[in-house]
Every structure is written in C-alpha cells, then in structure tokens.
Image (cartoon, rainbow, N blue to C red):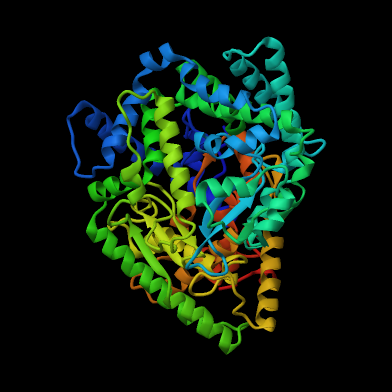
Length: 636
C-alpha cells in the first residue's frame, strides 16, 4: 500500500498547514465557505442566535434599548403562520403603485415616494463624505444595478453569465405567477426586465473599474447632470428632499452611466424600465413575504454562491436583525463577549505596529524626505477603532417596529428611515465617530476618507488573536491583519488621500512614479494565475495584495525584536488565518468580483517576498515556494 505523500511546507505553505483539515472539512449546506473567517462567523452567529431566542422568550434582557425593535423584527421573521397566510398581499399596494407608472411624468411625480418604498430609480444616489474635503458631505450619483454581479458576465461567450440569466429568468417567472398580472403581462414584464438589464450592462462600470475608487470623484454641476439624465427630473427629486436648497455640485461616481443614461432610459424605453422596476422590486420583496416566496426569491443567490439550501428560519431571523440592526447588535456583542484585557492588548499592538511602520518609512529607499514626512504625518493621525463603539448611532432610535405590521411593512418603514437619514446628512458635517463595521462582524477595514482603522470585537479570536497564543502567533494573525489595514493607507487608492482623508497629491512626481512601478510589479506577481477554472486579475486585486505585503513586512520587522520569537509559529498562523474551503461556483464568483486574491494565494505568495521565509524553512530554488530575489517585492 502506498503511503500518501505529505505536502512539504517549502512547496506549499497553505496545503502543508491546512491540508489535513481541508480533506475532511464539510461546507455547511447554507453557506458557500467554511474555515477561517467563516468558522468564527458561525461561532458568533451561534452565540447571538441563542441570545435572540432568549430575548424573544423573555428569558434575557439588555439595557441597549435599540435591541427591542430588533427582537420584534426577529419575531416577525419567525411568525411563518402569519407570513404564509398573507402570501404576497403585503407587497401588493406598492406593486400596484409601480404598475401604475405609464409615462416618464408619472415617474417624476412619484419618484421620491417610490424610492423611499425601495423601488429602484433609473440612477442610484446617496450622500457620502466628499473625497476632496472629507469634512463635508456630497450628493453622489451612479447608474442602476445589474442582475448579474459584474458586466463581465454579459460578455459574449461567458457561459456562467448565460446560465445565471436563465436561473434568474426562471426564478422571476415563478415569482411573477404569484402576482395579479395576466399571463401575457407576466411574460412581457419579464422580457422587458431582461432587455432593460442588457442596456444597463453596456453603460455601467465593471468591478475592475470600481476597484480604482479614486476615479469615482467626478464633480459636475447640478445643471449638467440634470441635462444628462433627462427625461428623469433630478432637480424635482432633490427639491422634494431639500426644498430650495439644492446641491450645486453632484459627484458622479460612474460618469459613463450618467452621461449615456439616454442609452437605457428615455421615453422609448420607459416601459422597459417600469417593468424592470416592478420585477426587481418584487424579487427583492420575496425575502419578507411567505416562506415559499422567500425560498423562491433566493434561487439566484443559491446558484451564484453554490449554496445547497437556505438557512433555518431561526438563522434567517438572526441574520436579518444582525444586518438591519447591525450597530446595536454589535455593541451588545462587544459588551457581552469582548474582554477589556484583550482590547488593551490589541490597542497596544496596533500602536507598536504604527510606530514600526514609521521607522520603516524613515528607512525607505525610494521616497524623498518630504514624502516620508507626509507619510509619517498620516500614520500619526490614524484613528484606532477597536472592538465596538461606545454608543449606538442615533438613527437606530428612529427604527421602530410595530407589532401590528407585517414583516414586509416593517422592513419598508426601516428602509425608508435609513434612506431618509442618509439624504439628511448632505448639509451636516461628516460624523467621524461613525463606525464602518459593527462589533459582531468577523472582519476589519481602513477608511481612507477618515484615515481610521476598525477592528470589530468578533475578529479578535483564535487563530487571529488570543491572549493565550504566543506573540509570534498573534503577529502572524491579528498583527499581520492590523498591518494590512494600515497598509491600505498607502495602497494604490489609499496613497492618494492625505492625513485628513482628503483626495490630494502629497507625493513628489519622482516618488509616485517609483510607487507606480512597484504597484505594477505587484499586479504582475498575481496576474493570470490559474485558479479553480478561472484566472486571477492582478489589477482587480492589487490594493489588497499591497496591503498583505505591507502587513507581513511590518510584523516581520517586529518579530526581529520579539523575545523568544518563533518564525515557524508566525508563518504557520499566517497560513491558518487564510484557511478556507469554498464551493467552486463561489470561487469563480470571487475571481470576477472580489478585490481580494483567493485565500490560498494570500497565504502562499506574500511570505515568498521576504528573506525570513527562506531562512525559516530552508527554501531553495528546488522548492515550489521559491521566488528569485529579483522578483521579490517589498513596498512598505
């Protein structure tokens, strides 16, 4: 009998560390992945599901008042008897209003009210911090959404896109059969929906274009944008919200979609748009209607992600409140399960990493002194948001849930509050105390517009972090993640923002040119790698790869002065962090849409750029985890 050959760490770090687990790990039927982030998320979910069950039964209470409406919403999801008895009925009133739109004038008269109900307009809009002056808010516009997750899915020869459109078509057809529409109208509405979607897909940005988010900053006058989007009455819409105080400047996030809006929305295509708006609203609403409709409405997502079945109704209830009441739930999780000792320890680590980053910048070989000074100033001003916020955002006080309302009506009212709250921010200063992520989310982020880093309480668990792990393990886990987020301040996008979060060039021409060369090298290091039947797009994932590279660089620097350091523990825990088993459909979806490289490549490629990797495991030219010295990249 042949013994199975064990994968050598010198040939494949990821497989050597995670291989045995990957062989036996089973992906839950209701999820696209397991391992790493997903396992921690499931653990958090299990804890909070038990708590919400106890809240709903009156067995447990909390002094966080905003949890009360969350519990009421939770109960509405679980009340399947009521939901099934009501069927489509709760949505019929809104659907009737959308169906009544016969002309562009009808839309313009009702656009504001219908958008508050959740109907998609021919353009999307919102209020965001202004990229050039992060103290103030700006009104932003972009094109409508597409049915498929990216414009690349619509390209000729894309078999996945063709298959997914067929899945959507069949799903929408079955959902439309529940409506009062005649069979002929059902057929016409669906055909028009697909036709409008095809028009939109030729005008809106691809995920690759969205990845360069600094290119979203395209200020135009209100008059200019209003002219482009005719016959839609943008000024009329804005007057309903802002009366006579209209924004003089609009930030156009997707210039082609707005400048060429007539290519998909005009008097001749209005019926296509109206039918698309009806069908899209209907499909989106299924999540809050009967269980049959809810299951049917998730068909497209299940296919896209490779998910076998929907979560249990208890999970669905928790997942909805965890998303809708994210900050109150995150604060509750943080206060209940996150220790102050851990918080102090990780904040100390963050400060150590920032200090080390500053030393590395000072020693940097491609930057001139004036650029180094600006980079250090930016590091000095980074705001650390650790665990969870001290208080819940005021908007949640407005999100009440009436016992008499159906689940659908409750969600409509909540969404209207959130939409109105966003629009109301336009003439208010940017609130830099707002958190980008809730405490129960297993993730972390950097916000270039506020120059802050957020580490929710939920990510501060093994393998990322534990007081009981060695310093080497924690540096290879949460340390590298912290370094990663700080590095986003200096990736291809973040490097264009200053210490106050303003989009401004603080580089010398020579320095930025050198940085762009290194960025291009990083693109090439990943570009075209074959993975799970697809290929990595180096340009799409470059910002995250720069961040991974920086995270490893700064923590390896700290390792040098760490007592009892163990590089094997460092690299092994780095590989454990990225351990993930995923459905093939989901991996292919990520390759087209995600700005992160596949987990295995994140584990295997960054270490190969550093001499410590080669010294620790004696990696030579004969080994697969070897990169020639002239191909190794260290940016920060």
